[in-house]
Image (cartoon, rainbow, N blue to C red):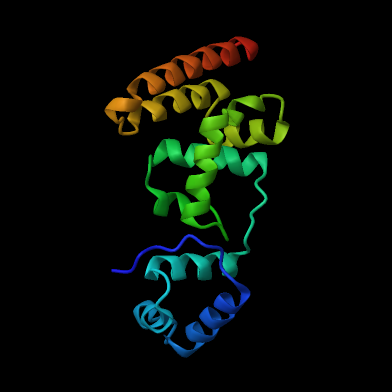
Length: 173
């Protein structure tokens, strides 16, 4: 097993990877093991992630509607990233995880009750902002807690509960 390298990808690495993908692609399937054996600088997973990232575009500009869809999808299928990914085109699983973590960490998801596009999406999904706020606090509790992080998680859950109450009062739910 190779050691992971965390350096940035150079353009020559990207070009070589694309060339090897073309060489090792047969009947629509890419032989990632052969590519990894040829390049020998990173893990097979790193090559796959770079290729998918380049293929889908490096950055995805998230709309508030997509953020809501991500949170709703997560509510229905907690931590089932492959299933959640089916709702998004051109977004990798890694991008979904990163966005979910960003939304829950910054609690940004609770900050757009006046966004009409978001409200419309929630109504289509049969949900409310109150449900969404409660979902955030529930999902934090479903994550596996490490003993050393329990106190921080408890404080975070209390803050999320307070925010959910404020949000539901604000919306008169």
